[in-house]
Image 1 (cartoon, rainbow, N blue to C red):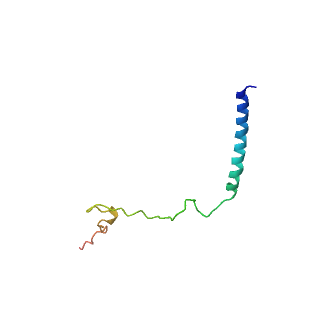
Image 2: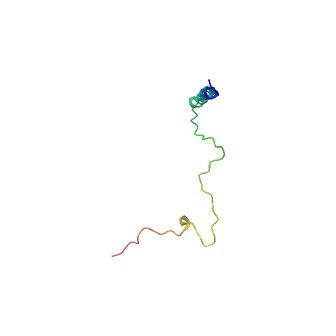
Image 3: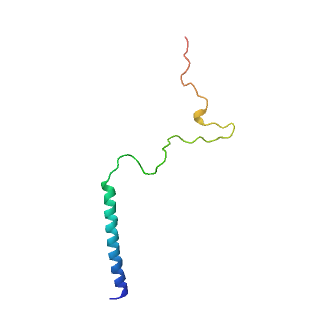
Length: 76
């Protein structure tokens, strides 16, 4: 047998052993379902966007003047 065939056989055996270990190690994590809603990134969850310092005279559209959408009543 040439050295290429021996190398390919050893590579195949190593591949099968590696796939076996990966499958057995991932089976435990799939079995252990953790429904706590923790995505594992840690830290404090903040849902508010950061305040951005705008130049003078520039305002956010939500902070602008509000229009009264109700029309004024008409007297007859």
